[in-house]
Length: 258
Image (tube, rainbow, N blue to C red; front, top):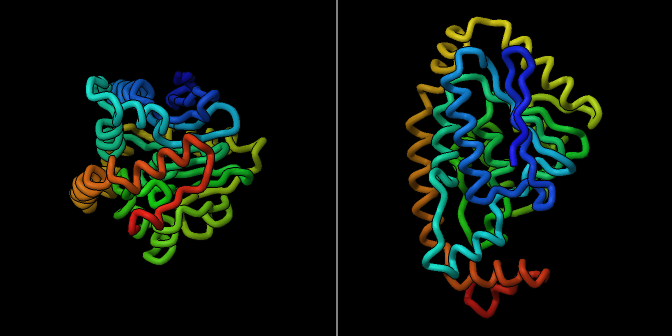
């Protein structure tokens, strides 16, 4: 589900559910959370990279499992789930790099706002489909995206559910470097090794100074987003969106007064 590679003091996590375009089900949320917690406490790890296997970075939350969860009151959630992963990403003390190798949806985009450096392949594209699903933003993107991209770019990204190209992500500041598809991992690793050569204590202290002024605001944004998400989940518009997804059609919200 996640392939782990070590390259000196750099640890690489490669999401590996290609049959689901690396969508996050409960098991994948739990697995990545546990691996991050382990890397946090491992004195031999200075830097972490997250990327995806195949043609996708991550297609976001597994919508099929989400539908099952809503339909089955006895559904057992994971130990950490989405909330645990999001909080772990916010509080991760070491440099976190994302290498976006293909499509990114949902958490496959909002995770970029919680990454320290984002590298994108030229062919990559991303989308926050929250309004398509009649839901609200997640992973503190309602705070991180305006801070990173500017309010209007963030508004378009979070309100429109339209695709952004890698070039658009770079021009708005969501991506740090654009790379050819063939060179993405080499360039990401080169930058990771530069960081990994520094003292871990200095990296952690420096990141803490960057994050401390905004950490509480990020957690507060998460709380507000979770409340909005819970309010919208399972409402008629959301159910129509999920049904349309399952039937591979465009949702029709007009009859719902939406």
